[in-house]
Length: 121
Image 1 (tube, rainbow, N blue to C red):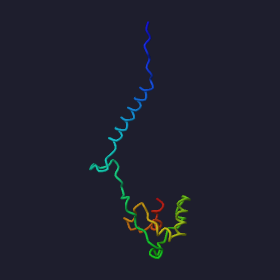
Image 2: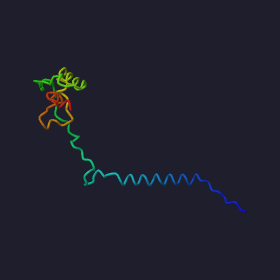
Image 3: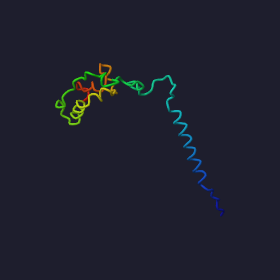
C-alpha cells in the first residue's frame, strides 16, 4: 500500500487568507459612498458644519449682557451650576458661539442660551 505524499498546508492557508482579505477590501471599497455621488447620503447632517455660529468679538461689543435665569429655577444640580457660572462669567460666554444653531431664533452667542431655559435642554 502506497502512502500519499502530503503537501504542506501553510501556503494554501496563506493564499486563502490573502484571498479573503482582497475580496473584503474590494467589497468595502465598492460599498463606500462616493463623495462626488449625486445621490443623497443615508444620514444628511441637520446643520452646516463649516460655518461658525455668531458670537461677539469682544466683551464691549456684547454689552449690555442679557440677564440670565436664576440658578434656583432648576432642580438638577448640574443645570443650576451651569446657570450660576453663566452669571459669573457673562463676558466669556458672550464671546463663545453656540453650536446648537440657536442664532436662528435670535441668539447672538452662547450667553443668550442662559437668558431663558434653552441652556438647560
